[in-house]
Image 1: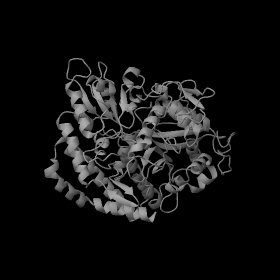
Image 2: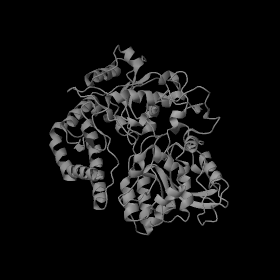
Image 3: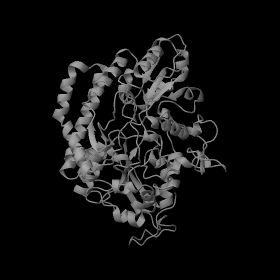
Image 4: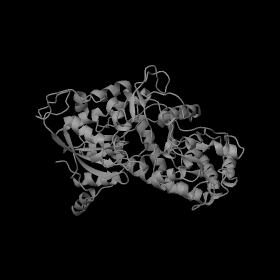
Length: 563
């Protein structure tokens, strides 16, 4: 009988054993399924003799799973996607569920203890360096190459569409240890995540145009603060808000890019050369600008500590609109897009021009994959079944089922003569409703980011009809907004996923973790005034040097050159 282990009990048991581990993880990012299973093949397992291309199995099999329980999704065992997956496959999934926060640390502790399940799944849960450590070095994760060759029908279809993906999934020893996430594998709104959304009715109320420079933006925020644009006679306006520990909502990400290239890798590639970011003078000038906004009460102080749900509480304030602008990967993180009156007031801003004339924004120019969201461990007695489950989520029908919901409820078949968001591709589906405020209404019929693997470009198969600002056209609206930003793509090249082998893997993990922790804290301290930018800049540079920032840049360059 299927049951859910209590992670607290497991952790207590692991601590009694006296084992622990230091781990690494990659950023979690963004919230957004062909029910055909894999080919029927004689694997020697009496269970693998299903009626239709492998599934359902002739006899039930139990596979244990480590999975993330997202706050946006009801208990997985009660979720209809989970239930339909078990019914479709005849596989009992024995779940160990952990919350998103701290999942990487719990996973590392579990792997170090030697007591871990057959499958580990969760979007962006394992980095490429984790695959090196637990695959190439410790061999806890099993190679998937032969399994994919035999059973990975849809995985190989995705490779045919994106030939670079297979290479990017391959570790230093030539093995593939995990299946990564690729969000609807074509061009889309995740290609540019540093976005700013501004209330245009407030612009009209204060008599100002859409800002195009950093000085104009400062003037707009000052007017939002002082001129009562929500017309309630109270100084309750929050000029600019954001959030932390979610997708691209830190207030400084968009703003620092008005002064020079900035992203949280803290390096970028141009013409084959890996360039540092954190030690550049333009970052210092950008921090001065953002600090000035903060010091003048133009940035919500809570933006540096609050989570996405708290940010959305600001955007969806019940009494009146109180936020003039917000930074986040998509505006639906901040607003209920089904509140059309409020949703229609916010438009995307184009990148701002800084004081020295720079204008640009990081923009992904090619689809790449990195890390893994699904791996199979050496405990698994039925890896051929496990890989077929992964393969289901690399095709269209199960992607749509898991991420959009049930047919005739959230979506249905498209009307004849309709087209997807590119205006060319004939539509196959249409949205019946679309909701991004998942924390306020936990989903029982969707998985959100519980499991996303190598998806085809299914989003472009949904019809776009009527007003682009209708909630059912939300993906198309984001696509159109992102395409506008492409004209401002920074003069940098997309860095391919890099694999650090042997000692380099350990070194990179140690350097990048220490530098990212230090830099993210220092940036906030400079902005909020805890550290003085002018007086503290030299010591900040010295700290970067002490932590090995240039060593990290050199290691990235070395690995890029040797790829």
